[in-house]
Amino acid sequence: MRKSKLKRVTPESGLTLVEVLASIVILTLLITTFLTFFLQSAKVNKTSEHIIDATYSAQTAMENIYELTLRTKYYERENAIEEAVKNLGYVQEDTDPSIVFEGIHSDTGERIKIRLKTTGNENMDHIIIEVYEGSDENPQAKMQNMLVWRTN
Image (cartoon, rainbow, N blue to C red; front, side, top):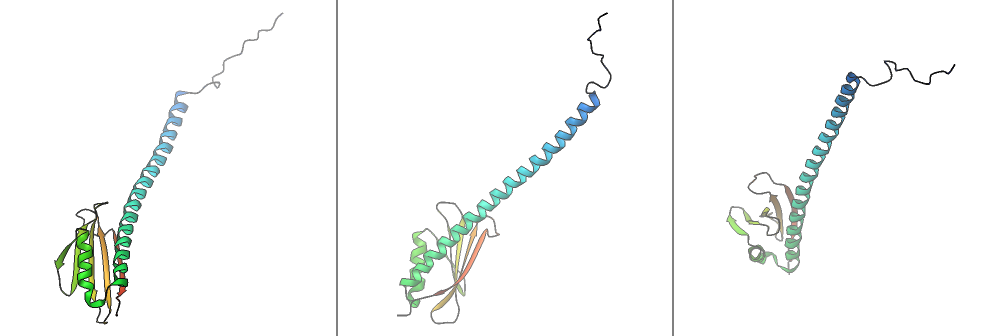
C-alpha cells in the first residue's frame, strides 16, 4: 500500500483574522509615532533656520558698524551711521537718549532695528541690534556690543 503524501491541514497552520488585525494596529502605532517625530523635527529645523538667518543679519549689521568705527571719529559718528544706514534704506526714529535706525533687510525681508546709546565715555557707545521677522514684536536675534570710536 501506498501512503498518502497529503498534508493534513491543522487549525494552527495559518493566520487568523485577529492576528492580522493586531499586527496592522501595531504597525499603525509605530508608523504614527515615527511620523510625529519626523514632523516635529522638520518644525524645529525650520525654526532654527529662521534664527540662524536672523543672527547672520544682525552679525552683518554689527560688522558694518564696527567697520565705521575704524574710520570715523567720535564726533562724526552720528552722521556716518546715518549715512551708512540710509544707504541701506533705513529710517531714523526720534528717541531720546539713543539714536535708533530701523529698516527692512533687502535680501531676507527682516526688520532690523539699530540702537546707539552714548555711555558717558568720550569715545565709546553701546550698540544694540535687533532683528524681527515681519510684524512680530519679539526679536528673532539680538546683539549688543560696545563701540570704541577713533579719537584722532
